[in-house]
Image (cartoon, rainbow, N blue to C red; front, side):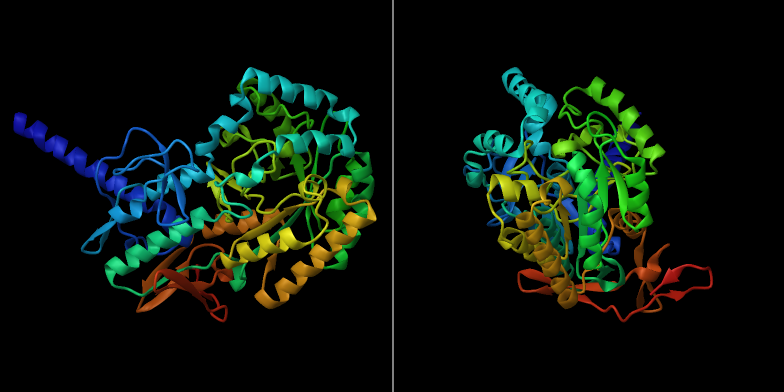
Length: 484
């Protein structure tokens, strides 16, 4: 009897270890869509009970539990470097942390829970309530002075890294590189990030706030169309804003996209769970009424743990770096990712309002710097441009300059200019694709693979380089699946 119990416990431990190993590999496999056996990551030791900040090499700050060293309470203090404790056992990489958990902690902003609207102390909550009560009476000039007072010291925030944080991408690259070296391979096949071999993706979104903004939407579509770019317009269904049915139809008739923005833009959507659930039901109804698949919360307030109450296919409320936003934090990635069944399409550049009115910057310097950093990671470059804030000629000229810059980049780097709904469809299709070896050839299988491109990650010293051959086209297999 005792022997049976012992064997049962051993089996249970083996199952747990196997499940843990799968979890260790999930982030890197999901990122690359490469064959599972290329990433053999195992935990080396017992994870700590506490969570905190640590670093992986110089410059990559992580948050989570570790099996070695210490975890810091703050990201700007002394951090333990877990890179010193990474080892290999044959073809297996032994890690003192779970990279999948760390990636989730960053993308879901678990390190920044104290910034959530529902976690604010009573005094801060009272000030916030007063601001949103008075906000309708304030013009932009008054609002920007109030908001600038809150920004004191924002340039000194070390984490997430300003102006673009690619910690998630850096970590996935390093995990794959370790796996390649442990296995003695220098080239691994994977499903390229974007359709038809595009180097990166560009997404434009327009959040409409007041009547002036609604009235300017037609002219804004003219500007976008003059550069051959389509965008998504996020509309507010209740309160002093109200959605114009004629505007919705006009947007769609011209090939643009319509999304729902919050409920009434009062800043209180995520303040209380019960109230949020009540509002989410109304928001979902508006999404159904207007046939909108995408959602964005006003002012980019968010709580990703509550997203399961939303009946939308995708969300666009999470900044990459939120140093200038009322709710700080950031997802530390320039790629879409899933929050349950919802695809998150993060905001990876600074909003026009912050650029013009908080930083007082009417140049393309910051936007071009962010774009170039994201393109280096083959990521998603997404913008929020408000019709309300580019009516004036000075701001409008900057926006035209941005579109011209993006078009030039698109010509040289082969960028995919996409609507958020198109990104949603592609990323969902890609998440179900896999790379298989058939008769000595690597091929991509799965619905939608006709637009997928086979790529290779190559180990070059201490970093990865990607080889993409967009000339490889999909072929039809006897069973009807598309492969390469």
